[in-house]
Image (cartoon, rainbow, N blue to C red):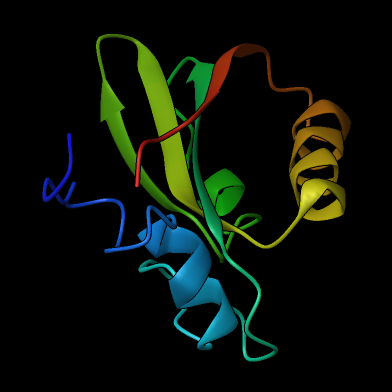
Length: 103
């Protein structure tokens, strides 16, 4: 309808998010020093990991509950994620679940 302005669209019907990208506004969330968006992941591992094993993942936090250890934290990119999974494999850890956490 004429005169209606959506919160996502400007006066001329343009998408506000596209306007923000053109103006250099970046979405919220953790970023690398180079400005790349970090993703947050959770990796559930079978059993209670010792402090020695959890120290193999210094970039992640952990919590132990219900017979599982949950590693969680920011992941820089896909290569970092695959590196974390390879580390789990090399340490003989059984990964039960891996998922990206919402922002």
